[in-house]
Length: 428
Image (cartoon, rainbow, N blue to C red; front, top):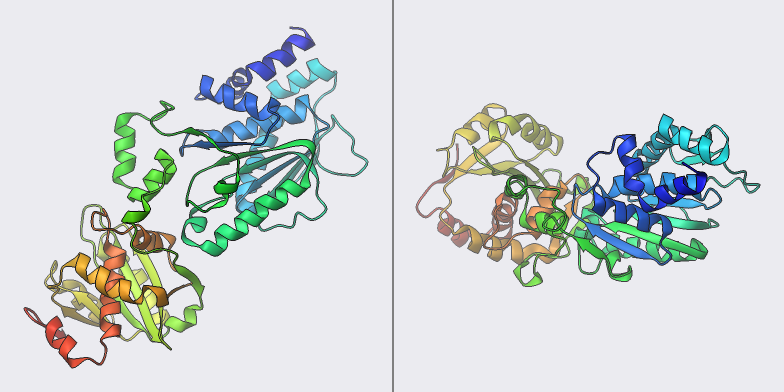
């Protein structure tokens, strides 16, 4: 094969190159993605479902640009530095593959070598830059962009779950993306691969994306998709696989305040919403009211409550918690008895209030004053933000609302008489 024919093949049929390297699952669809990443001229966005190999395509495209267009400078950005390192490492492996080395030998008559290879930078011996700028620089969204200039900019999932639950994070990511426009060289481009998380996240200022949902690519069978869907919250499945947002009219709890000082939960009340089997979560809440604010540490585990005892005890002791109410409807009080034996001030109560009414009455009443402290599980917050009357999972909002009910009415004797109707509410 002549040099010209080889170059034409690499540009027009990059998936053949990918297959030789071992990426056998890439299809004609991925061929178009990679080709567009290499030769496209305008800024572009690609939304594709989780597991569609879009990041793999970016890695292959970057490696080919470094070979075919070695004078171009590339910056690759993900949310965190650790995420960046994974992709830079994959690009390095592609460049060091014997097949790649052979291709470069045919094209340039030299043996391909990495003259710069760190966790975040790569340069080959195909170019010498007097400025010392690497061919590929990987960077997280928290790093400084001042003084940097690049020809090709790839962003990959710089919008994530944090952008969904935090307006401050959404605004920060938007500023980062706007700064990328300032470091783009004349004639350069930005290529974004992303997942939609919020209507007002950074995707709202990116080019209108080409979308490939789980129903479009043919990469996931109906059986696999049903299994995935059964294990995810509706909004997570919608965002990651269907590339859509849950309708805003279904959402009750929005814009959670996160990042509070964990010390504000010390000596607070604790609550366990126990899971025994099936797909439920064991939800654990520590809440402390202070100056009209409700500080919350929330944890959740998708497993039987007995397997969560070590963590429940650990957080209870670490935060020097006081009383711990535990509903006895499902277990006749054995969880409370077990935990009391471990020195926790557990006691039972019988729940007679409709769960949806409880959540939309008590948790909604304090929502604007709730502050989730550092250490709270993202899944805990996400389950609350996903909650509506038809939600598949409601363990976390149920647990949180149970403590909200107690703290709102802490000194209200009439409330306690209502709560104890039809059951007991006493220290064991």
